[in-house]
Amino acid sequence: MNVVEIISNPLLLMFSSIFLGHLIGRIDYKNIKLGSSGGLFIGIIISYLVTIYLQKEAPNSSLIKGAFITTELFRLSLIGFIASVGLLASKNIMSIIKNKGYSFIVLAFVITFTGSLSTWGFISFLIGNLKVSIIGTYVGALTSSPGLATALESARGLDGSSEAMVGLGYSISYIPGVIAVILFVQLLAKRNKAKGTKENIIQDEVPKSVETKECNFCVTSFAFVCIVGILIGKINIYLGSYLGNFSLGATGGVLISALILGNIKRIGFLNFNMLNKQLFVARDISLNMFLSIVGLNYGYNALNLIKTTGGQLLLIGTTTAVISILVGYLVGKKILKLPNIYLIGGICGGMTSTPGLAASIEVLDSDEVTAGYGATYPFSLFFMILFTDILFKL
Image (cartoon, rainbow, N blue to C red; front, side):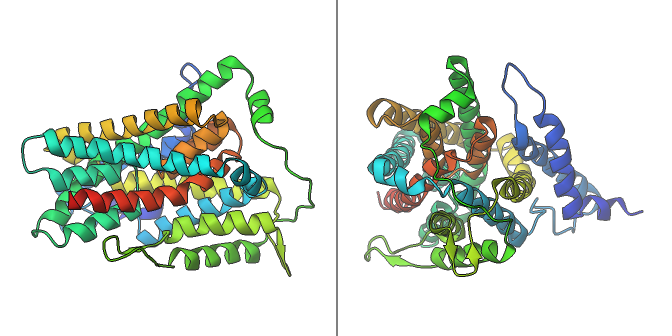
């Protein structure tokens, strides 16, 4: 039995992360537990340990860089999760946007602008040629793949090492950005429960859905949601010569598709109003795959870079994430007066944090939080791309 082949098996690594992550996620400390997010942290540990082993025993392995899971499987798990939660939250999305739509636009602007302002401050006052890496920490702290794409595109016109420096900042700050959102969700939910029961909070803050006949899980309809979403994500919107093109990407496109089609409920033989308990299964399977893959693919690079030269960038990225969350929360709570369940979702959307959304769904035991996420997420993508491009031009 070849040990290298066994520990290099991506499916074995993924399911091991899910299994062990669930065991860790059940540990409850003062009403705070990781839940499904345990797979993320176990994935980070496994990524680091397996990569170290491969460096010694199989130095020519293609997995040395820690990219254990293919991009296609990662995107499949992410799209499956987003489509599921989008359909679950779609019944109330239109009424929420109609009543509070401007609030989510403001929230998206505040979170991304605060992060960019913090990043600009670090660039301005730190000694040394760290500008490109610090911009990388901005898109990493706010866990924005479109922002990363924009940063890499802008860096391509600079010197040859600029793209690598963007990747360095992103890799170091991505995991702290995810952790900051997850901890925020856990702590805020605990505070809510101290004031009243979870059921009372949800009933008070979430408008009741109109009762409609639900159907069994329909693979055809689910696939149609994903197809439409992927096509929406590929639409490029030209924003002028200064800003270039903007697109939602597959994740944003599928979310919009699920929210819209789920609200329509039926088109011909396609029925998008599926049973919640069956969508929960699709959501949980894809969620656990997604979280474990994030840990496996980013874990080694993040921990290794922190151990070597990334301490300063780690602090910058963590600070940017925390400040963005806190300012977003204060504005959303004190000025915009958003209900907690939508504010939590809005902050996860503002941080473009799917792991944060996953944690909030689990801790609040309600997919209604996705409505706030869905209303904020597209605007956050736009502002992230805008501010990333501006940071390079300053």
